[in-house]
Image 1 (spheres, rainbow, N blue to C red):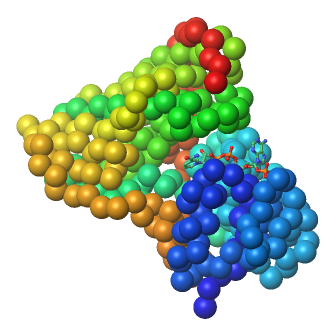
Image 2 (cartoon, rainbow, N blue to C red):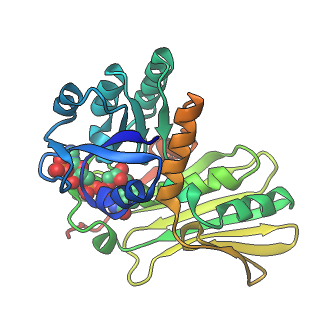
Amino acid sequence: MSYRIALVGIGKIARDQHIPAIAESGEFELAATASRSASVEGVNAYRTLPELLAAEPEVPCISLCTPPQVRYADARAALEAGRHVMLEKPPGATLSEVHDLAALAASRGLTLFTTWHSRHAAAVSAARSWLSEHEIDRIRISWREDVRHWHPGQDWVWEPGGLGVFDPGINALSVLTAILPRRIHLAEAVLDFPENRATPVAAELTFHDPRGAEVTASFDWLHPGEPEWDIHLHAGGAEAVLREGGARFLVGGTEVASGPDREYPGLYARFAELLAAGESEVDLAPLTHVADAFTIGLRRSAPLFDW
Ligand code: NAP
């Protein structure tokens, strides 16, 4: 038996990943969409989620692929209508709106799943196992890409709540918080804001680790050419690196784990598990680090940004 599911926000990530992942999944069937200007051939289409909820009482699952600033109202409406909800990353524009959704889902006995797709990259679990066996000395995240290539014309990333360079950077933080065997917290941040934009284009983060490891992250959204999505690990006198957003893990220069991109099939498989178990999965650790960066970060002015 498969779950009927509706997708909200038929944009870049819905087309690149969600629609193919649902199509290949034996556990979900795309039953409807809600999007103001797009639809999927052969699938019932609505302009808004409230219209869809009213017209499709037999669709129990809603997956939200809209930008974070507009996600809360839809998520709340879906839960109030008795539907299970899966949220793209970041799960919301603020921490408290996600706490509110989690409480609502719990009170109604519904599943809420805050997804972090990068945690499902092929080599992340190998890095987690390696770190668990070594005393950590140093971790250095280097997450650099060209926003003009990866987010062409997506103005919402520069609006309040769009996170700027933390839109990709939060993927690194989602991996970091998945592979570290303990909690850390942000100690210092420096954020560079283009003078004409509301969100940062670059960030330098320094974390406090209770066991004394040095943990830093460097995010840059104006990096030309090939992206760099790497996490360098120094532990127990050995060096390792989680490369390409978590797709490859190398220890001492030798590749020990890698695999094809199965991040979104992994997310839908996990959603199916949560539905079957009647559970939620709500992890706000990556968004908490980002919120802390906006709270304590030193703000510097950067050159104007235009597409
Ligand atoms: P997008 O293409 O710019 O937006 C998705 C869709 O949301 C739009 O096509 C639009 O569809 C709808 N929408 C509703 N309200 C909107 C508003 N106020 N502003 C803009 N669009 C609005 O974004 P995306 O790249 O798919 O990203 C969506 C989410 O997925 C983000 O949280 C992002 O971090 C995450 N994500 C993106 C990627 C990626 O590579 N792009 C990768 C992983 C995760 P209608 O106009 O038809 O309503």
